[in-house]
Amino acid sequence: MEENRAPGSAKQKKRPYLLRLEQNMLPLRPRYHVYRDGMNPLYTIEGDFARHTYSVCRAGEEILVLRRKYAKFLPEYTVAEDGREIARVKKGLFRSMSGRVYDKTLEIRVGFESYVFDIFVGGRKLCQIQQGSNGVCDCDTIRMYDGTMEEIAVALAVICDQASDKADSERYGN
Image 1 (tube, rainbow, N blue to C red):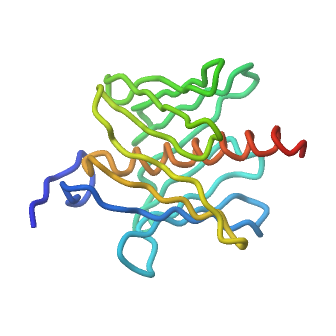
Image 2 (image 1 turned 180 degrees about the vertical axis):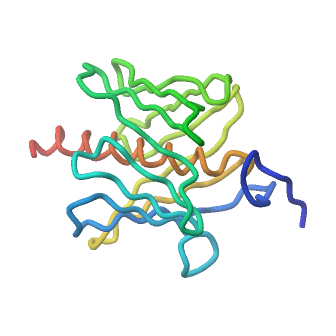
């Protein structure tokens, strides 16, 4: 099996593979678990009560911090690694999102119903996120095309989940 080394992470698969992101709906603080090929979570993501700061952990160790900027007309997010900003994402006027990741362009293309997100970094497709639910929790599928940025894709999946939740609340008047 071919593998390559991701920046700051364990070995990642080179060919397309799937991750499953599950959000537990019951706790007061948002909590996500990301699985690949098993029952034990590969990543755990926990947010604060206000849903402005998220800690992305692998094997119990914080590897990324996702923050939503306060008092912005259009949502803006940053991702930091070891206290250094590595990504910035801004929501556009018409469901689109864009920014920078490791000094490369980032584009998040949002499907019509806000349930499918195609993420491109430097013009290459990083992953596709398909929103879903099993009644008890949100269960999203992340199809990875470039495993070298798996951690970034996981953090971006939280942003996509928030965008999808906001679209649902606008759609159903919640």
